[in-house]
Length: 331
Image (tube, rainbow, N blue to C red; front, side, top):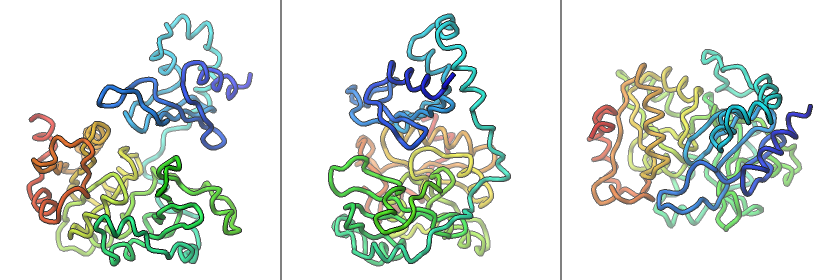
């Protein structure tokens, strides 16, 4: 049996707007949630492996395997066994073994030459207009890809080696954020599929030595994205890292636990962000002190509020008045 084709057939039956995502995955609309305002999602956020049936929604954070997918779309255990039993078992055999956290792949053996960043030396005016200083953009090596019309964010591993480029479209081109792969061929370089954002905690390579040489552990602020990270850094919060999403992976947890400082979670003020806070805190609270930075009252009800929505004064005040995760989740 061809498990890949069987899973593809299942996906085409129960999912909408299915499209290919890499050689072994598909993306689609998530069948398990709607947006906070009650309307249907318009952009694919649901990812599924055609090899092992594991799935994850980048928006609502739901995840599972092929069996739970079939169950949650409405099939009974008898129907699953009768129609898809062999496929479910084959998918289980293809599932990866759990990661050994002591061997987290946070250092790359296949970095990119730093000279590539010279291609993106144009300054992204959209970020300057948003209030970012040119010195901040230079510090983080932010550039602009005039070929693909994307603001470029270099991604580095824990050792500071360049491992990838993420590009944010300044047009309506989908997806908004794109991890470069085939784009490298534009500059006569081989295509790359070498880095996984789950293993990269953005700016951790800079935060690690800062904490290492401080007399006592300071706190680490964890945000979702590149802009939030740069904004807090520009506001004077230097110990800030970004998940590149709302999901705190085992690799992220491994890095944070070894840095050893209290963690201040400051994700976006929408439903995925708040769910991300809860899930991240529940993973970290057994080994680290976990606090939550709240949004000021003027933004408390704004679902599109992000850390870069705050003024410099608000950033300082809210960080200084962060509450424990226990207080945040029970009030």
